[in-house]
Structure formats: structure tokens, C-alpha cells
Image (spheres, rainbow, N blue to C red):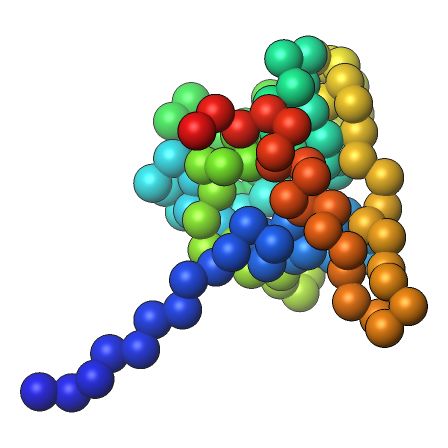
Length: 136
């Protein structure tokens, strides 16, 4: 019997990947609510209840509510951060649409860009981000 290697993606990993995608306007793939999705994340922050959220434009993959054509405002999603799995930054073009249908209710307190320490590593922003609103 062979050995199976598995890597677990940490919250820190996902936070960093989403920030990279936002900063560089790159799409991501992820599993969200057990369905494969293709997103362009636009904002990372908290909703009015202080819960971590990502405002994303979904342009592919599966969707519980269905997808409109690329460029349609119907494809905006307010993503619950802790329900994301297997986040990967992709190559490809940035997708967006005007007048997102998830106004300020999705992200009312946006995160600033992650701070980098003197040795070049990311500070513990992701832990602070999640600690402020994740239920145990």
C-alpha cells in the first residue's frame, strides 16, 4: 500500500492567497459550500456583525443560485471566509461587473493590505481578522 500525502491549507494560507489575488487582480479557484467555484475577489473584510467575508465576482464553476453571463451583476457573491477550501490563485483575466448586487452589507469594514514584518514575513493579520468574528 502506498503513502498518501495530504496538505492542509491553513487560514493564514487562504488569507494570503486571497490578498495576493486582490492586490494583483488575479482570479482564484476554491471549493465553497462543497462546490467548485471560480472567483475574482474584490474586497476582504467583515460584515455588520463582524464576521469575515470576501466580496467576489463569480465567473465560473458551480453555483446554488445559477450564474448569469460573464459581466452580469447577478454574479456578485458575498462569500463566508471560513467556508472556503482549497483556494488557488490562477492565471487569466480579471472579471468584474458594474453595480454589484451585494452593496455595503457584504463588507462594511474592509481589511487594509497585510503588513509585512522586517524579515519579509506577513504579520498575524489573518489571525486577527478571523478572531474578530468567527464563532467557535
